[in-house]
Image (tube, rainbow, N blue to C red; front, side):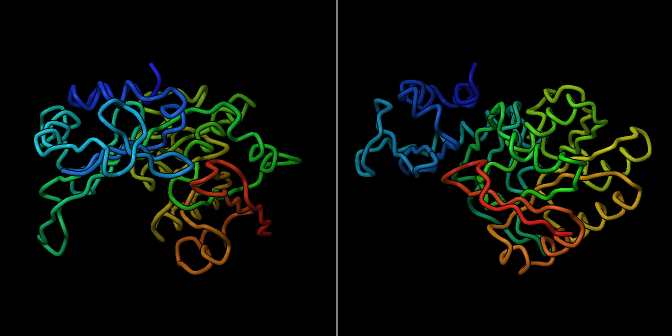
Length: 294
């Protein structure tokens, strides 16, 4: 079953049946399924937002299918396996990761408690479809392995294909004979199971814990991490590099100027040999610019 159908299968019957009727090319292109209370059903593609009518066809906003409050509640129960408390921490973070590595972004009404804003009432879901694309990392693999291995940070805005490239890169590096550890905090890289060939996958580990565990027990040559978002994570990577281990990571930035403007990505630029910038949402996974950093 393709990834689109896997996500759709957990939706309420009306939404599931309508989306299964959508055009095959549209389903193949879709990167997100967006469901909002009392709002039009929509898919996101590299070309933009596509509204869906009651027959599964692309439509104008005014003719699109409107999801109702009951369906929103049912989706919430289904993605949490009917157990709110089992996913309470994920909900507080604002997203869940489904089996297969598909991330569901949540939004709605929050409450401030203990200095933090906690999501209490869910009103929308953004299902990000995790995809395996063979060859997605071909260019990056050549860049970082010839004539030797180079530590690399891969950057793009959200939905730019970073995770897809990193997932494919993990397979290529492991098949090439490298001892590889993959710190997969959210389960998106391994897609809910070790699909990365001959890699040690640390799913659900905090990056710091995963890096330390890898260094102590797994003897990696290279460690891969997705979405470096804090300066503390950047320092954890620096400690790993000082142990002689190589790294490939991803982070959010649209270009060099953007990366230099924030402390986290600026620190990553100091640490790595190569920065690879991807085009972004309209051309997921396509390289825009490669900048040597040493």
